Length: 329
Image 1 (tube, rainbow, N blue to C red):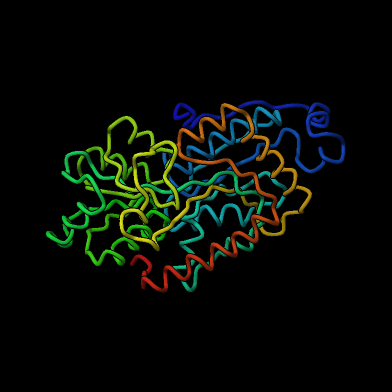
Image 2: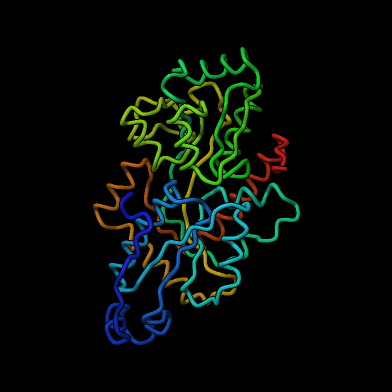
């Protein structure tokens, strides 16, 4: 799957062929034959969001016969990516492939320029817990060990924040710091991939990351997993406890990936894209790939996803307020 990085998923079809694939003339009018579908990712290549986006893009390209491109517009607290989608025509050809981090970021800034809840919800495509890991030579084997080290050496344990403090990875780190009453050195990154590179290189000590990339690193013995942030252990790493089992009963953070269109995108187009996204996660090899990454396929309906966004916004707004998390300076 990593070999897909930067690849252009080819396949142009005629309008007549698209009509047959899409199920008839009315459906074909929803998307323009020969015009690519762009999935805008607000994080750098190689991270969990990017990897999952490319998996979905490949399947959608195969199913529709259309070109489906993944474009990374990292940095700027997701604003450049959201701006790209917000300014696009609501014709279904420019979509925002989002992770939990994008929604969390807007809870940090009272004047954040974009509200993800006002974009057109298409579908939640996959969900799974996050995972807390450390570099192998840190001498830490459990959350308890990590907290003890952080208390012994306040402000010296270096945590990489993939996507910055406003990402789900950053919020999870701040939440751990608050609940454990420790002080760590937070190092922000534009995405999870460069943070992982520095973790493997010994430049940082720990990080919270999404399962798609980090579960593979853990299984290969490249990092030491300490805990997952869901309510149950991951089938991919059954020996790794949850944060709840590690002494933090209120520490539950679930990561998700989903698709949004520009505000005002017609519902028939949103429904068509949702159906294509749901189809993309059905093949056995895709389900197995997601499972190997600690993720479960979803394929929710647009209205269901929009409702879930409201619930998630309220959930993370409370965490940010209770933990007094401040936006990055």
